Length: 244
Image (cartoon, rainbow, N blue to C red; front, side, top):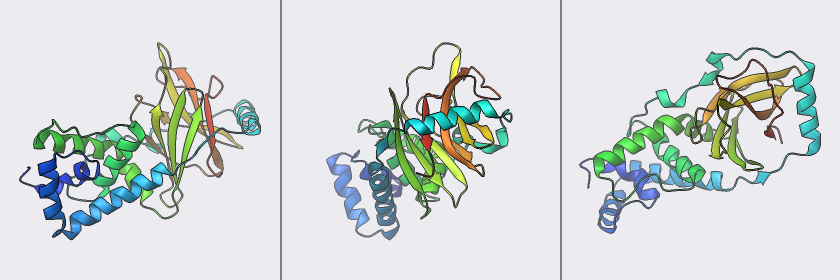
């Protein structure tokens, strides 16, 4: 058992402790209000994500999106609008968002993120990495106005989180086919004035968080040349109405 038993809230909630570790942690849990709060918040996050229902976009939405892309010359990508999640480090005990982030990772990836074979140091490092990837999403989910949606298009599956309070939208890939050699997936926020880049999908399991744009009510995903494009060059492989 780690000397800092407080760091095991995520592993406990994800059922990733051995029987002896779980028994010892439950004894600690009975006396630690902070850890009880972290575990409860992570379980609440898991319940909200689990309630997201996958929906196929109506054909009318697809037509409107394609029309908007063709109609207006698009703006170039603005790097300042995208939050790179890998670069952020979240202290294990600074906030309960790390616990919520672990729940998000487990649900989105469909697997346990902390394995029983890991020692305490490895588990803490894994939780820190999860916090850096999913911490911003956990912060969004904590807002009362946040909307969580599941999107499915062909073989692509993802969870989309929209937070008007934070002014952000997050795309959490769950199942993403290879885009092809020399290609990448690019996200777009689409409205009447056209499509605005919301960033590139760095890999098939890292979320992308972008600032929302006034009037943009559709999130689209296209396959673009490596490095991205200033405007969509292909038809969207996925679209999702953000105000549905």
